[in-house]
Length: 268
Ligand SMILES: Nc1nc(=O)c2c([nH]1)NC[C@@H]1CN(c3ccc(C(=O)N[C@@H](CCC(=O)O)C(=O)O)cc3)CN21
Ligand SMILES: CC(C)C(=O)C(=O)O
Ligand SMILES: [Mg+2]
Image (cartoon, rainbow, N blue to C red; front, side):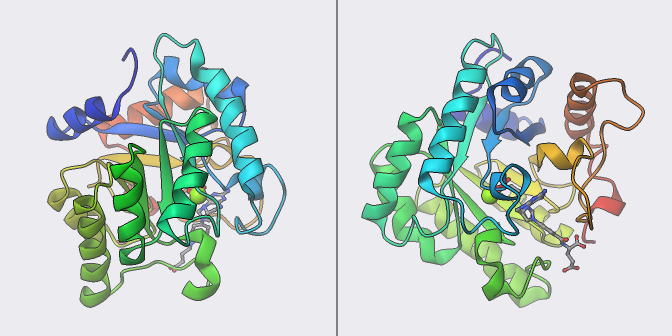
């Protein structure tokens, strides 16, 4: 795969080739991902839950994100097959375009190739400002974990025709504002399908059904390290396999062939 670029991912979408995304928070795991074909490594603010043991992602700080982005960037640096590094903008760092740009710039300097921001139409000016200043942005819509108190918990979003159409319209407005990727979390299959068909940029899904252009899982979930109630989209890739590398390879293969997600991982 050599070095993954945004242009390369656009081409994959155009050619109907699916790609795999995994979260990583440290150099060791990140270094394993490119060589097995993971296209994008996401330094997710889910680190607040799976690394720091918090109950939500809201307390994660810029300093936390910078530390883990630096660790991941060092991990992928020497891979022949170098994945793209995406870093989450943490909660409360995107309240204005100018403020967001300052925070995004720090993540790019820490080694990110693209930043991800949560939110719909409200993020339009921020996406326009960041991309105009040369910072690629992925827009995260649907279930936005930083604002679950507003959403009423970790609930499927975009149920019902009006609500589904609104999320897709917001996503297309953010694409028009310059977003280079979209991420849809916890939406009905039909909503994932509608946005993937309407957008030119790649759409990454997590619980967004089989029709989106890429799939992402949290590292600790796919290695069956998380305890308690699991979201529907979680699949244990370590089961029946000897090591972490085999689990990664299986995930990449199942995403690329479309075997993952199966109906039991989706919100039909
Ligand atoms: N370990 C981990 N995995 C994740 O995928 C993840 C995090 N942490 N932290 C940040 C967010 C939170 N996420 C979540 C958490 C729970 C559900 C969940 O349980 N959803 C219900 C939906 C129920 C409904 O509305 O019908 C489910 O049953 O899947 C979904 C996404 C995704 N992200
Ligand atoms: C669940 C993914 C999409 C994420 O935003 C994270 O890991 O923080
Ligand atoms: Mg996140």
